[in-house]
Length: 153
Image (tube, rainbow, N blue to C red):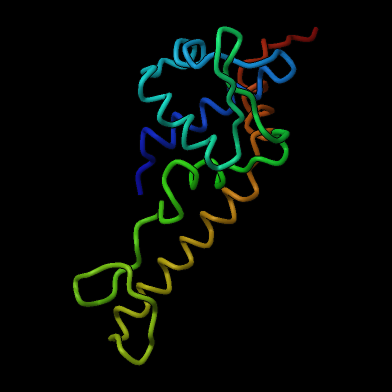
């Protein structure tokens, strides 16, 4: 499983916006500069996030982007599904060299069935983790990571 640039940039852009809540609309150029993302590509990602209702956008000289919901109510899964669609995980093999077929115990060999079951468990675990991880959680982790070291004597 690989994380696409679109998903990576989507999460980074949302974290950037979450850091600036209450400061008004954030121009996409500013996000792109801080995050090291191409302006054009970021605009495409922000459009997908806006369509999903995660970001609100305003045009004009004082325009930009803001989170449409509090960081506690935006999950990583929502962000990734907004930019990738709901099939962001690889499809489950169907036993005939194709992927994506539903699990049907009567129609597949046992060796295929056990693989399908494991891949379904992987999908469920990924969904569970992404559903449980909010933008607020990511912000807290980022603050911990960037906090200056404290020494006590």
